[in-house]
Length: 143
Image (cartoon, rainbow, N blue to C red; front, side):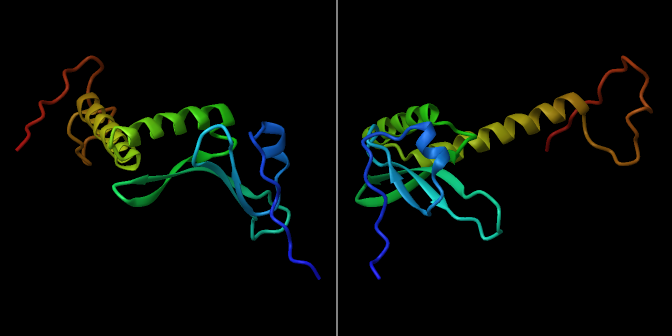
């Protein structure tokens, strides 16, 4: 028996090739250095394998992996653009993983702020229909 050979290296990935992938493994894209698609077979029979875009980079002597997103939610073109942006961040000594986390936290804070300003302070005893239409929102006292 011969050991299973890894898939041949492709200079660039294509959508048709990505959709046809079923064997588990890492498939490098020749367009952006460090960008690859990781395919993992599903443990459930009959379910398609998961495919995630990842970018491998080195910053301050440490190797890191930046998860871009899941295919097909993040397409090939978008994954390449996001990988190029992350590569530029690495060139400027900015960790794309920390930048992504900071962006997500800022979005959460922004959404939480909108909820507070739109609905006022949450009082479990007060129902949304108790206030007449057009009534002013209660003032928010922050301590």
